[in-house]
Length: 301
Image (cartoon, rainbow, N blue to C red; front, side):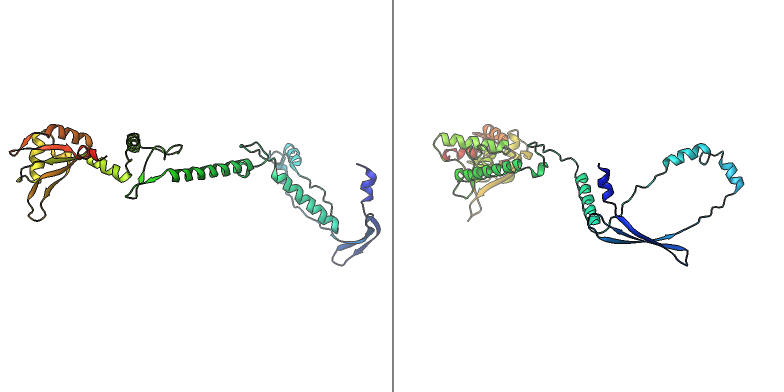
């Protein structure tokens, strides 16, 4: 740094007056000229001399010389810990404001620190504000919208208003397919391959219910629902807890039995076993016919 340039910035002192006041203070008035702007400045300083008295006990001072905290060795370390304040240059007028702005801007730059690189594209920005990531999200959103439009075109609605599930509908769709839904999709694909109409969700639910429903006909007209529960099933090796409900069909006008009944059991496997065991057997002086409702209605599909 050029020493002449530094000296040229120091204000030139023209005159200095010292006034002693009655209260013991001194007023120092300094008149100076700024070498850069040639503007005159007047500086007023108030100086007061202060005397601090410290009372010490000779006995205590003698004891302190042997203390680790106040001894001669501790005195040297305490002096090393003392801090001396930095010189502060007082600037007047516009220069003070400019220096303040520079100081604030430098603090802001220091607070920012090093810019973290984006984990996604490696750019000098945060991952949340990454433009590449935003563009890819926008493209994915457009693809999802197109996929939804294609699914709407491929979606088939049955006469009852429910959706007809097919493999074409779930093609390329990220979703979990349950075992029951896969079974429905496979059944519909089989019907489509045979040139038949696929089944809707309501029709599938009815088919599942029909698989575990027994259709028993040619019953004795005197048979009651309790007879079916307590006699027909136990004598063929099935306990009553396998039965969910029994519906003996009766005439609306007379209330007499019409000779057939619907029995819902716990699952399709039990229904198949019951149909195989009971079909063609005698019960209360008649030969009954037993089959699942699904096999009875199979010719409809």
